[in-house]
Image 1: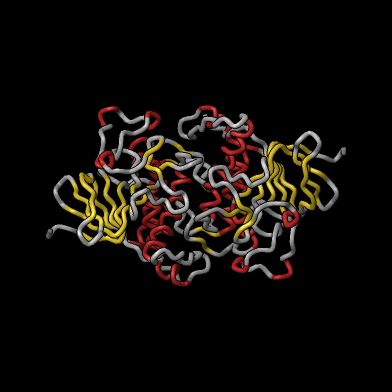
Image 2: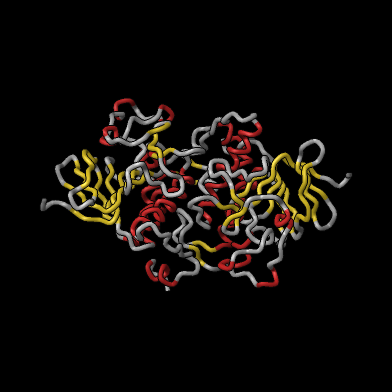
Length: 226
Length: 226
């Protein structure tokens, strides 16, 4: 399969949850490949409300979706994610070596150790409150996976954001758990906990130590800070 | 008790978790009284790293604690919180009517329907990694409460952030649950879910509908936006 690309983590979707997941995973040396059916980063944020003010992103009394996504992209940039836009995942399976193998609609493949589903739209029928035209609502490949669902999301363990399928994680509007709110600020928390869930899997089940960006020289160096 | 003041929610601590809780609770019409032993808002953020860059607040490639707190205060300001600085809660109990009654170290009282503990420091001995001088580590009133603890925090239900004591919530570094990370971004999520937990209690256990700030005219009006 000569066209297959490798990444530590494949992220399906490129909205705020995905963009912040790139940053969180990058802090711990994990390289991401992000695939989104839209032609640009930002997901719903960029498509549904690029210039509509959002008031509940912490620290921003007012911000529009476009600026938020631009800032999240800038925050993730030091970790050099690879993006594939305008493509959808049509099949996702394990290869004989246990890695995830995603097939895209142009026939190409991406191989990764872990997968994070961060796409609210296109993966399933979107819930009615998302406000997308009916024409865009078609079941995506996830509709065929044997994943437990509830309230339009994939059921995850809220300690790790892992789905019932080991190594497959879901965050943002794609996931559901008790108390779940479909807020961007929760997606950020979910991305951070999924990152630790992935690190724990890599460490063979042991909790990996968390570093604080204010105190870690290693992280400051990664971010190009002195 | 002529000096007693009333609030919908008493928040113990005035760090980022508390400041964002004011905003979240305010969106749903709940008025907060915030008490902190420090002389200013911001908690650890203002005391331990006012001018130290933080790199993992979503949407801010770099921000210092002072600016973050200033922005959170500005975001919460439309909801006109009451602040009491330089005072600590020395006793917290239920009055005969079932309301919470907090006694402060100057003898005054604050009465509230719900309490959110959002103070990592001063409420218990801080965990070793917080880096506060030993002199500041003395058990606070919470040390006497019959609350389940783990890893230096109060055990909460991560769907509601309610402790084992009904009506008493904990967020930020004060709480613990499976997967808990002591990150500011998680505190924001915890504040949002605690808000819905409080609303559910007010609604007699029914889930209260969540409004999105981009779409809700009521919320825009509350924020002084057209």
